[in-house]
Image (cartoon, rainbow, N blue to C red; front, side, top):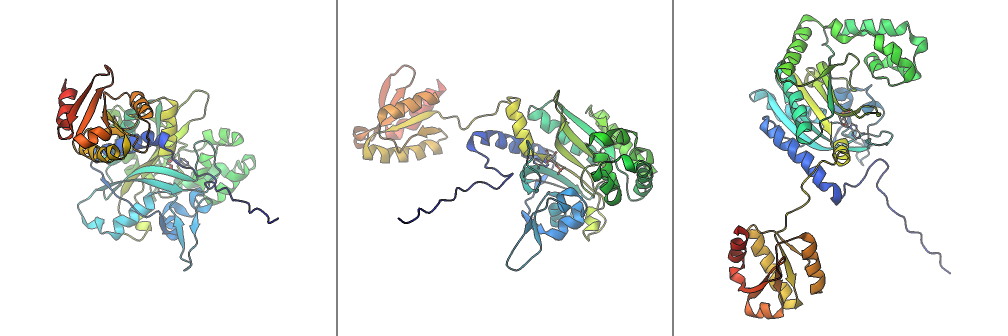
Length: 429
Ligand code: AMP
């Protein structure tokens, strides 16, 4: 007997998933609120490719950062090009700013984007390998007011999404003038405690000392809390800038926490950095958004020195939270009528009537492929529409349609070309 060929059961790649129709209303809500708010704040939309030259991230995001050194997806092509799937949005948007001559337009340039990012992380709750971010970037202006505006955007976004338990943490990392002295102070402090550090921190000590402050290991916590703070090593310019950012936030009455251990995972940050967390009793805080100033990125990528500030929030975690917090979102279209058809001629006329109603702005639900009138009436009932429009063989011949009031059961036959006016009249009542 010939062997039965085993069918392979395809699954989405590990750490990646389908965004299903039952969640679509939540995703749409976050994107729509983000987009509307961004436009109200003067941001314009930009879309950049999902794939870029890998070097853009190595030089931009930073060679020693986790998302580049450990988590980047390289793309194999026949031509052997050195491409990578974007692990984050900022370097691509910065490249687009330079490549499209935006530096010669009136500054600042305020852009927003959203879409998938790719990080080969260990999947767990709220951590995906294909994750979705929405981000803002402001190029060409170093004013502290723009740092504050970026945080203001975050604050109002979460409010509008019905997520109130957010906590904004802020710090300043200084600039290339004052950071080296801070780095030395940090190294000096940690070197004296090297034996007590976890293996990861021993590596960070060599490769990326600022990330020492990011350590979550229990044994490193007492060392971390006593570590020198970057805010105590800021030069005059950075101190003044940070003070201004905080004053703007105070003026806006936006609550924040100064966190001297906040460093963020990316290399390009200067001056202000911030992160927005979700606080839940009994659980460790979950990062929902993060951002900061990156005045050297464009220069590091080969452009003219251009100050910039930005932030990104993660849609996956926000959608999960909205569901958990039972935030109300509009579920699908608000159907006004149900089209019930019977027989081939009725179905044809119904298809046409559907289009006519749609053009008149009357949303009609239907179940065109069904034959049973009973099943169709049941669907109409379930949807809670006010009227069913019934079109059978006879109505198709007479160019009429039956309007049935779903509550009273009263039916009236009207000419097909009068049905829109008749419905409008009834809806007015
Ligand atoms: P980052 O670009 O790392 O600063 O991340 C910004 C935001 O994106 C975070 O605050 C998270 O909400 C979200 N995020 C980052 N990594 C992941 C991931 N692997 N899965 C889901 N969301 C993520």
